[in-house]
Image 1: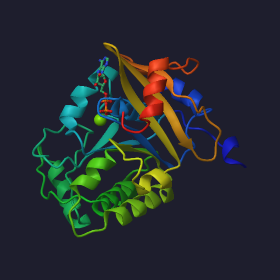
Image 2 (image 1 turned 45 degrees about the horizontal axis):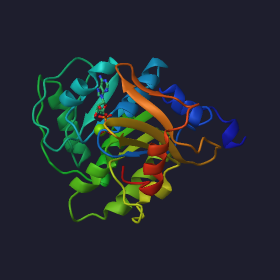
Image 3 (image 1 turned 30 degrees about the vertical axis):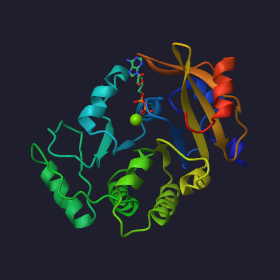
Length: 275
Ligand SMILES: Nc1ncnc2c1ncn2[C@@H]1O[C@H](COP(=O)(O)OP(=O)(O)O)[C@@H](O)[C@H]1O
Ligand SMILES: [Mg+2]
C-alpha cells in the first residue's frame, strides 16, 4: 500500500486537510513553522481537539507558555482541558492549582524524580523541581508518559524553545534527531512548532520531518493578512500554493480554493522564510 492510499488523519482545520489531499499521514512527525502570532499554537490546539473528538488521546508539551496562560489564550476555541493532557515543561513553572484529570508535570531528567513529581501532583499543587530541559530529558519524559497512556497525537510547543533552553553539555542536534526517531517509532502523529528558522541553517527537524506547514502574516497597507502554506509533505501530493486563512472565534479557517493577494504573494516570494 502506498502512503497515498493510507488512512489520513484530519488536522482539525478542513482547509488544511484539503491542502494535504486528505490530511496528515499518521504516525509521523511534522513541523509547524512561522513567526510569532501567526497561528501555530491555535492550529496545534485544533489538531489535538480533533483527536479528542475522535476518541484519541492527545498530549500537549507546553514549553513556551505555562498551562494556565495557554488555557486562557485558547479559551476562545472552547478547549476541553479535561481531555487534552498538558505536560508542563515551561521553565518558569512554579505551582499550579490542579484540576481533576489535568496533570501538569514539571521538567525532570530522571524517571525516578518524574515518579516523585507524579506523587506530588496527587496533592493540590506541585512545584517544579528541576529546570533541566533538553531533547534527551523530554524524550525520557515522553517514554514514561507513553508507558501509561497510548497517545495518538502530540504537540511540542515549541522546539525552538526546547533547543534554546537546553543545557550546554548535551549535543542538541543529536538530541533532536533521536527525539524525532523516537516519535516515529512510538507511532505518534506529532506537530513540532518552530518559531523561526533561518533558511541557511540546516536544522535537523526541517529535513527529518515528514512535512512542513508554514504560517505567515503579512501587512498589506493597514491590513494584516494571514496565509498557510504546505511547504513539504513526504509520501503525498499536496497543494503547493499558499492559501488565505483567518483566525476567528471558531479558530483557523482556510480558504483552500482561493489565491493569496498579489501583495501577499510578493512578500512571500521576496522573503519566504522569515515572515
Ligand atoms: N478570539 C480571537 N479571534 C481572532 N483572532 C484571535 C483570537 N484569539 C487569538 N487570535 C489571534 O491569534 C493569534 C495568536 O495565534 P497563536 O496561535 O498564539 O500564534 P503563534 O503560536 O504562532 O505565536 C493572535 O496574535 C491573534 O491575532
Ligand atoms: Mg504559540
